[in-house]
Length: 202
Ligand code: SF4
Image (tube, rainbow, N blue to C red; front, side, top):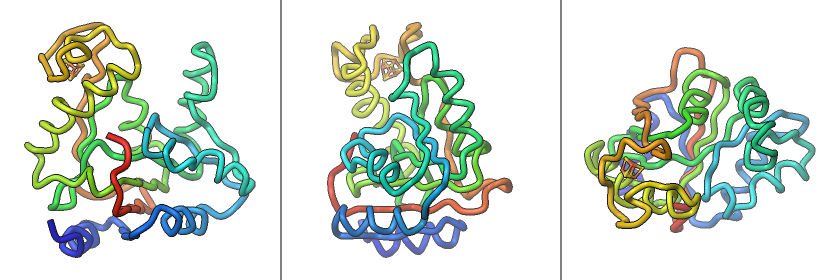
C-alpha cells in the first residue's frame, strides 16, 4: 500500500487528508484544526481513546459531547448534542486504498452524525485500518473489528464467542447498518482525514 496514492485519491474525492509518522504530530494538527471554544461530538472509538483526544481537546477549552461519558439515561440527549456540534471526531472501521470510508454501526448515531449531522468531521485512523477495497473492508469489520468490539462491550452475539462473524440476527448485533462514504456529503464543509503511521484501535 502506497500511502501517497491513498492521500491523492482522498484529495480527488474532496476529503482533506493529512499523514503523520507520529501521534504527537497528529494531535497537534487536530488541535490546530479545531481551535478553541468549539463543541465537539465523539463516536465510540478505541483510536480516539488511545490518543486521549477527548481530554486533550477539553483542556484546550472545547466542550465535549460523548455518550461514553454519561449514564445510559442521558445518552439519547448526548447523541443529539453531538449531531449539532461544530465538529465530530471519529475513527473509521476501514479506509480503502481508493479513498472510501466503510463503517458499520449498531446504533447508527455515528454514521448518521458524520454523514448529515455536523458540518466538520475529523476521521482519525492508524494505517492498520487501510484495506485494498470495500469487500476487504467489510470482511475486516465483520471478522475482526466487530467481534473484538462485541467482546469488549460484553455483547451476547456469536462472534463474541467464535471471533468470526456468524451473520447473526441478535438483539445485541452491532452490525445493523453499513455506510460507505465516497465523498463529503453536500451538507459538509470539511471532512479532514488524519492518518497516523501506527496501529491504532481495531
Ligand atoms: S455475528 Fe453479528 S454482531 Fe458479530 S460480526 Fe456478525 S453480524 Fe456483527
